[in-house]
Length: 149
Image (tube, rainbow, N blue to C red):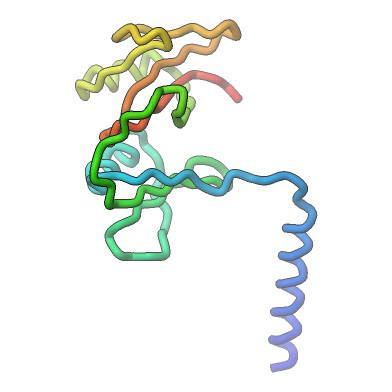
């Protein structure tokens, strides 16, 4: 019993030291309040290809995705209305090829625009990155680009 307690204390101390060594915040998760959890889950999982991860609630009102080495996207059911926000507030995902992603959008009948708001157009940033904007099923704005970092 003493050995088990000592191991638990050492594990806690090691975890605490690691957390204390971190000097800057790290993005843990983004949460989106959605109207139709199933529709949003299908979009992010099956269309965008994000990997789901276990969520602790198991209540049918949450879907969690991994979106980076230590970051997650949480979908939470219960929104009553779609989002109508400005595209300046958006989530950005990078893909290997914007043209290949556009083919996928076109095949699914999903509209996209460039930064100027022109339908079916791509913006080329001054650094050479290509980008487009689209809305998810709840109206949240997404940018998709081909940035390498």
